[in-house]
Image (cartoon, rainbow, N blue to C red; front, side, top):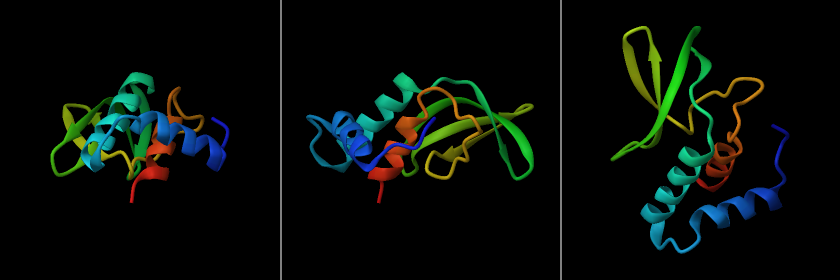
Length: 103
């Protein structure tokens, strides 16, 4: 994924939040775009462990999270805190756009 320009990020923010009123609806817009475009599963390294991002979810109080698995363990990690692999999975530009938008 090549680095997106600010203009590209703004256009993606506009696309994700069109017809959304308020922060909650805009968050749902980003969740929808990430779920629709991000190719899962993919692997990332967290605290020295290789984990699999199996899905994306929207949790009350946590926002958009990546559901990560390692063996039989599962953990929701905020998408804003999720390190991306190199190269990133297809659709990861929507995470970048969300990071651009998020406070």
